[in-house]
Image (tube, rainbow, N blue to C red; front, side, top):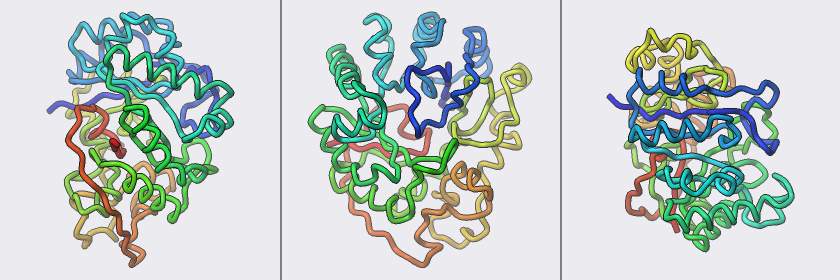
Length: 334
């Protein structure tokens, strides 16, 4: 078995975005020795770097060099800072990169993040594309931007990038959580404006009739390490029972068999007779856990409401994007 490993090297960031899930109060970093331990114990094929702005990690160059020299496929998300600040030779070590954009215009993006952020991400995209890197826009579908999904798809088309969309998770605040209608309107707009590469967001996958997941990938195909050293099935997972101090005594199979990872696989009783249950698995487990009850179906499920959601989509050719099947996400291309 081989899993994808997601690592938050640091929760340090040059921005303080209101919707971010990172813990902004207690600065933390993983060490190079801890990264080596992860490699030795889990033997992953790829590493996804997220959480904070990773280039702010004091040992970023050494860590990336170690991983790239080890043959690991590397991807990283950034608000633009890392990809404009790091040396070109280091940037070339990445397989693909993601830049965070949540609004389709400079005015809205800068108002939400900080003045000048739009120009920064545009510069980051241009620099990465000049080096031949695969670039993806990473957007979070929220109550304040669900109606921007078609605009973001069009922006990706103009820039020649992919677009990856995550549904907002209320880790720090519920202020940005889309309601049921906003959630589905966001995906209608997204899928009507771009071609679908993949969706591992379980409830969206089920509504599209794809049924090719075998449950949420979190806790099955991926393991996450937080900057504080917690080991979790998902970056949004609220329960932290394992830490890096446990890792010398655990292998991949033992982590996946641990109590908290097994809890992330719980299928709500109400979903037992659903024709999509074997693929959807009750929807996003972290979303249900954050709402306080894993035995309740995904709040965005139309079937438990006795409703139907009609989503039309056009499939796109497969793309070699490591994050496409190891988190609950949706990837589209123009």
